[in-house]
Image (tube, rainbow, N blue to C red):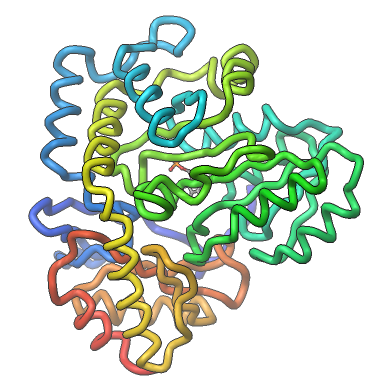
Length: 376
Ligand SMILES: Cc1ncc(COP(=O)(O)O)c(C=O)c1O
């Protein structure tokens, strides 16, 4: 076991959701009660307490049980899983969708199906931990390019020409708030004969045409799109979208798919309801982006570096862990929950406030944030 420096030890705090207005209620270590505006969770559209999702999950639970009771190939598959897979296929314009209990697991399955010891994986420097674990498990050789630096990606692709290579990126980086140009990455992959895997965990529901993510309409080298229901979809579980041949191959060969209990039916029902809501409110994503733009501009107007990107994740880099934790405390004292993100989650010296702009925040949230953050 590693020794963890004392100032890097994380403590788990427990929060109770107040479903009226996206406030989280918690308790401090010295037992003070807290009631904070939630500027930290990934529930971008506020769907986790949406009455329609709750009702769908309840109805499903009453008829299908709490858990699925088995893996998909034994007894775990329910009609609701198939309905959700079909609805996602249609919405995303993909031939095949497979459900997983979590995005972490879906990413492992995706990489293990596309890469092995003979593969060269070329990945953005800041990809999510689950993707790195998958790459390691595959035995592939890993080369990394600087964050969103497509010139460096091209150089690495040139060096790996004539070898089996797989490019991996996210479409909305969870700790940066930035997005790469997926179409350009796809073009580069085509040029060099590489496969492409994109993790759309944070983009789905908020970025791209009607919230379909940034991979919508892109195919060719794009072999698998990974998505999760734990963020904008407001529930839990995940999926991989691909062509039929890759999807069927996953069913036959993926341990991460075959040897795990199928997604709990109430979660599948909630995800399907979230999809219906997102489909019938196609402007939600754009509206959230507009709101996030306003927040970015206000933050920058106070002398802070403009938080990059277009989506609801605003990354305000502070520097040391200590400075960042002091800001977290300051915001907390003003009634705002913003979490300091520190190494090893982000590179040393770039501890940051990760501010999440969500759909159903109290009216005065931005004013409170600006007042508490102050000028740089
Ligand atoms: C980019 C990215 N991919 C995958 C995951 C894993 O998704 P899940 O929470 O469904 O396991 C996360 C969640 O933290 C993430 O941020």
